[in-house]
Length: 70
Image (cartoon, rainbow, N blue to C red):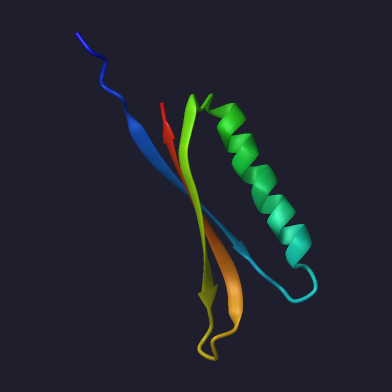
């Protein structure tokens, strides 16, 4: 009998501040990589980034969504 695959989704967020974006994105990468290692993720299906904005349209944050197989 074929084993059912289980897919899960995990969301990560970070605030983006002017002149600190590179540091914040590196921190987000480290957080995602730590999650993958800690949870022994077998296979990453997709990684998606989107930004959040304030009422003026300025980018103020990022949301990263990780879809993975357990």
